[in-house]
Image (cartoon, rainbow, N blue to C red; front, side):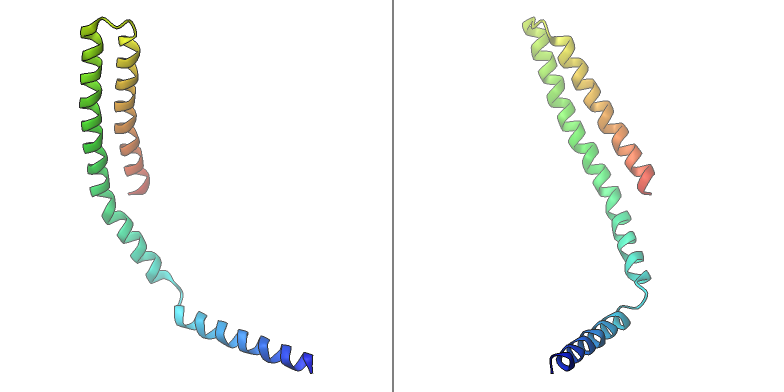
Length: 101
């Protein structure tokens, strides 16, 4: 009796799986649509990264200027880290753009 019940359950699972797989097709259309969506959002995201970088760059510039004006001894370290962060942001956005598009 248990074996018969097991066979019925396995048949039902196989039937549902077959119906589900046949309804999905080959999935190429979904992958192409997802690729198009990602590439369409990439340009605005890149512009947003550049805008955020500009704001952070201005804030960093003001911070370096304040340290320089007050005669703080570690001004060069702050300026170097600020400059390095700006360069990294620009290079990272460019590399990501060339990698994904």
